[in-house]
Length: 190
Ligand code: VGL
Ligand code: ZN
Image 1 (tube, rainbow, N blue to C red):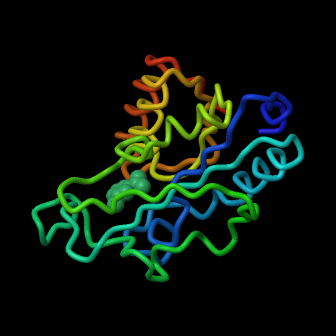
Image 2 (tube, helix red, strand yellow):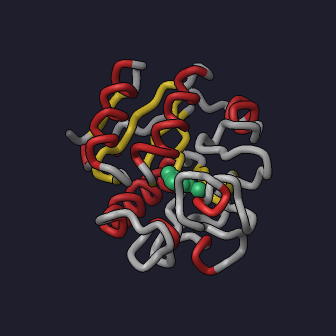
């Protein structure tokens, strides 16, 4: 990932998606090998700090009995319950003091896989002068995919850090990569 980090420039932002205990080893919706992304994510956070690039971090933050849970007819086991330890950021993730946190998945009537879905995040990025996002996090085939597709639709350029993401489902992850690339995202590190 070294070469890509040297390309950080003004107008870039770093978006770290859902690097939380729930998706890590021992979490309620643990993703295989998720913890392996942490050193790479921390490396790009450090690079962003050095270059004065703003850091945004999202978290999946569900009310009990959320609509996306199986007990409600949804797709997932209960996970990332708001304010529980399971929902907290991974303890080894070195988020900077001035990180901007995006909270999603709080709606009662529908899930929000994309960090842009009903959050006003695109407006915030424009206000911050962001033109291009470097994206890392979880899960490649779910929230990373939905967020990257929305970022492109909103007119932001996207660089996705392949070594700093993992899928829930590997086949779906490959399909997501293909669609993101087709939509204009640059996949870094493959
Ligand atoms: C996610 C499954 C359920 C994600 C969130 O952050 O990718 N995946 N909720
Ligand atoms: Zn969720």
